[in-house]
Picture (cartoon, each protein chain N blue to C red):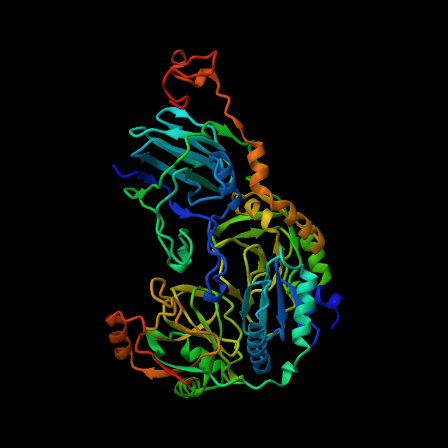
Length: 256
Length: 339
């Protein structure tokens, strides 16, 4: 990849990793356009690699589902020089053959599926070619990772689910899912921090609060954490919600 | 008596806003802060401050305000009808408010967001590094009638009755933008058509962003199925599901799934934030090199604004007690000119 390529707009057809301008003070390293397991693993591994390099001219370094964002301080470095440094970091490994590193923390979060807690469960399961109970079983058996924190404060993108869950977003927006809702699209789950409109399908709900503005840390989950949903009944969820505990019955196990 | 502002009436969405929270994207928290940051810089210039401070952001409507101590304040952003008692006040200017007097700020006559900045500053406790209310994150709330906010200390008595030329950013116009990581998802013909379309600011919009409409065909991306959600930022021009542009403002999300055709330059955000419903908007592509040149010229923004402030020349007909002034030497008869 030449520097010229790096500073040109992306082509939808282009293969492989790209370094792309992102606003006036950012560069985005994108491994793939769609959510593919290798690209998520590559993004996480490259994020770790770039973090370890501790580049002094960066304001922010952030992982996403298939990309890593570099926010540079334009008083310290030009976009072109920053792109050169990123290209140099990229050339140090074959990111396509990375394997996921083991998680240092594992979360288990109770979730009530279907009914009023997951009004789109049946429709989503049908699109995935599964009966609702088989769908719940598959989702709870999948060892999920926090792929990114974003959209809303603290809100995790979790994935990747098996290929059957490569569902398109809904054509029409769901006007409101509640705080704690679990929604599915494109092989991922989102656990909503706040009530929100969404194009994703709500299949479950938790009592877990991903954003606790006056607590330390304000955001308990971190990109790279492992996470599993544990099926709970509607009554169990109601009791967790009524307890007011922001953890919502979640357990976090450290694996140092 | 503690220094405070008493909000007797509040327009919908009245909130405390400063320059926002920089560097919290890792928490999923967008910068937030004033939808029109330029208005905070204008207030800083008018009040003689070295940096912008937290202000009251007033979307479409202002409110009725009183203070417990003599207070300097600036009115910037979308021009609104403002008066102390029955005396009309110049906009984009700094004034004095005395205890017992009532400051009434009405509807915007152009633009969207007006700003009321008290020189003493708002003593609202910062959360995650800013005093800004971030409604979508649940940080702070819109202010209601009856609220009292503590004021800090204003050490200066200078810089009142100053004015800045009024700006043209309150009626839409041209927005310069750069290409971004997803511009390539739009074919060349769609991008060209986008550049030649005049859009209208739709009724739908808030601090997260504004929707634009046009009479032409939509502007869909050729995105692959299963396009991964990716980082988004203020200024991004998202194409919603039906192919209409939605320009993100300060309180936007941090990750999104809609394809983006480009990013509006930071210095043109105030123009789109302040475009009232029905205003015409065009997008003008600039290269990265041009964007960098423009960004450099923005670095001296506050200095440039300070050079532009002028004493407010008041129409004698609007001064109720003209004979109370010593008009020749410029020394007033024991009262502040603002009285």
